[in-house]
Image (cartoon, rainbow, N blue to C red; front, side, top):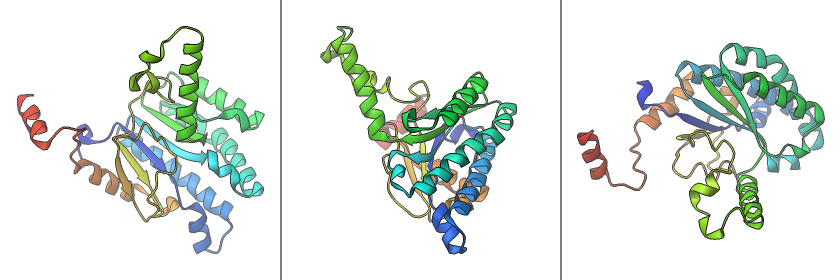
Amino acid sequence: MSTSTLPQHIAIIMDGNGRWAKQRFMPRLAGHRAGVEAARQVVKNCLKRKIKVLSLFAFSSENWRRPAQEVSHLMELFLTGLEREVNVLHENNIQLRFIGDRTRLNARLCQKIQDVEKLTQQNTAMVLIIAVDYGGQWDICQATRQLAQEVEAGQLKSADITPEKLASKLSFADLPNPDLFIRTSGEVRISNFMLWQLAYAELYFTPTLWPDFDEKELDKALFHYTHRERRFGYSSEQLICSNNVS
């Protein structure tokens, strides 16, 4: 596949860790650990294919509803994973960003997030976005709140609020929106992930459980993407004419 036909931004819901562990008569934590390894591999494989932005949905706003012990284990995995992987990411010129509401994260994790974001902020090979305590509804709400504050302060008129203005307040507004959305494990929902930003993404659902999502599975998703006609509201004939002119 030519890099010119590949997506600039891939967003992934990494689903199926628990089921993967259950099938093997292992505790759920073992599935999450296997999922961390799968995430490590997908970062490496996207970097190899020169994907510019990769977003991974690690922990949603709704995941706080899970058993307290599982949530505690997940938070510890995030922390130890950051400590272990940050130098490798930095050496590979990968910029790491976190999106989501950090107010419920513990102080150690928040500090580590700040440290790795600062360390990698000038890196240019790829942007890796990790969504933690993130929800698409939360993202739109916090963007709307910023606009409302500007209206209250007399800095903005309500008539000036446009889709572009709201989009500028969303998470990673300086980066391209996802071109390709992938969800593993057979679920066919977006599950409150990047609701605004996924408006024109190509959606790819696979029954493969996340720990088994390897390089071959990534290439299947990319093959699907390269064979889609992305029209953005135009007709096929318009696109053909435009390509002929260019």
